[in-house]
Image (cartoon, rainbow, N blue to C red):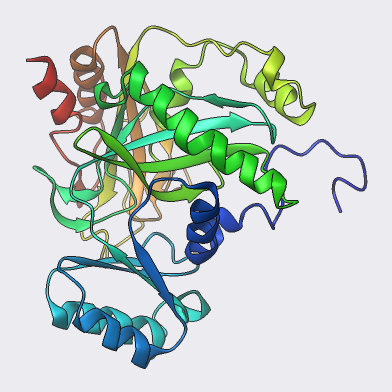
Length: 343
């Protein structure tokens, strides 16, 4: 309807956004486009899913088909965990309608990488590679979260691998969507697992990632509005996207208990104390009188910038240490993989 009204829209249509909203649809398109991804099988009947998982190698990944606020992916290391994940999704409806169909997928053991791209439905321009930290605790321990921090550029996504992902993943999926009559326009997010140097797609999102955006966009030298206009006017192939030769690290400050239950309404102190090389992005916050208080699990994203990952990390943590609220939690080792690679 927006496009019928000749409005300029930066983003995919509902049909194109199924790359994110249906994991089964996404797998089907990847198969058509011959994009490397984990082996998987979809199920609409719980009994068939339960029977299939009994013979599947462990660990095994159980995914709700639809959108589940980032909680619809279970890595089961035992048969009992796998059975419980299927029953919770399909019988107990813990994810609502999103979990009435499930995808049972091969577990890939490697290192995760995020590569987002601008696309106008034909041309694809990859952004700088980033790496998220999903686990709630230091050393990548504890429960999975929406993301506890990120850094960019990720050494794992060095230029050769980024070119490979563009050639073997991003361009083929965009071309496939166009052939299907649902051209994808906007930002395409590819969650990649690199296994022995080979990139496999874990998921596609029809938007930017959080917290990856907080480390990628600060390094964008081109004006974002100019990039958006090049996308909506279908002239991205004529536009050069430029980046700063810097690094960025984002540390997410959360409410204690996240990703489980947590309290809100805690006053946040130190927001006015600015670190010159850091930016504070608000997430789960609201203003209450003269105070800013917590209003969610992930409260703030604190991004530091520097000439190296180490400098950016130091800037981020200097700013984090100026901020406080009751029950705060954050990881102290964001970007540890990049620092280990450079040592």
